[in-house]
Length: 202
Image 1: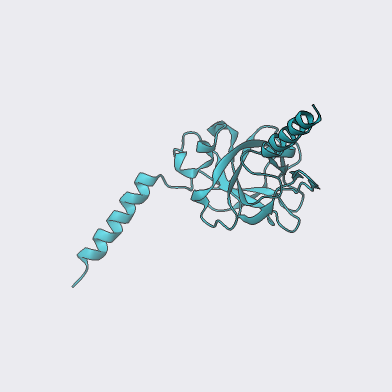
Image 2: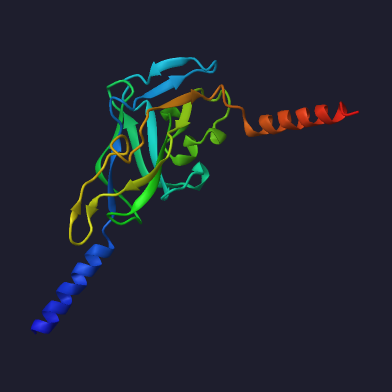
């Protein structure tokens, strides 16, 4: 009976550890504000304190990843707060598929809430010029972010996505989608420039 009890307890502990997920605090601070930039590249200052006017999504990749296209969504979405330039998604949030103590790379994409609530809307390439108007952008990459949580023997500290020794160190800007060309327009412009250069060859 005692052997069975110990075996059962061991299985429970192993299964609990296998389902443990790394934790993160998903918000920015007063030194990492979000600002808005218009179509003329004029800085309009911090995002206004209109609750729910903006969305922010956390993305993750293997530690050291430099290419933003290789990041996958965590499904964690935050909204702006009543304080200008600030947003919050909550504290001690679990990142599925990543254990406590794991080192990952993170970045955050932001966009005007009217574009939608999912990660497709966070990419400039999904925004149609003029319909609707708004802002999109993303942070720099924190290359080596250590996730918190209980790793089976120790409760590791939960770090914030911004600041500290490993979080995103600066604020970031959301750019007017009136400034961002549609992919088809960009391709057509590039084709025209190449054709013009070729036609002028001696």
